[in-house]
Length: 188
Image (cartoon, rainbow, N blue to C red; front, side, top):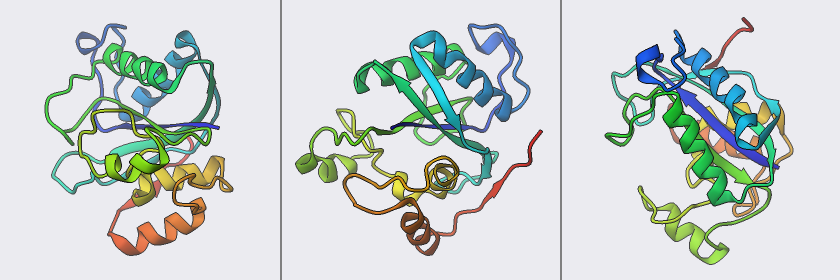
């Protein structure tokens, strides 16, 4: 199972993205990203509910809308990440400062049971704020309720291939470790 994390806390105007479309809310931005995936060889199989969450680390920027999608693709993890970055760019994302407000953020949460760069190096690379190579599963997903709650919607039985923990146990741990404000959004 390939899992993609989606997040947005800014709308996109026609001038900021190559598609020239107005996306008046972060929720619309996420939907546009999901719609773009099949054109890049990424088949969306399932999408979680969307959740509103406070920024991590805490700041005065707008709350995020987050979700998780289960996808299928023939792309390698590196090629998939490249395609996700292309979608981000097409929707108007410009990278300036780490943890800034952003139109779109697409992360590979898991790629089947692969551990990259390797089981031995995963914990070392996971500590790097800006790793020099791809790290899968996502190095901080197990600490973030805005990833875990949507993940619970679509694959509650998923187990972290490095930590050996279920989604439910990671939610329990993340809830105890840090005050993270999150709420599920209603259906449109």
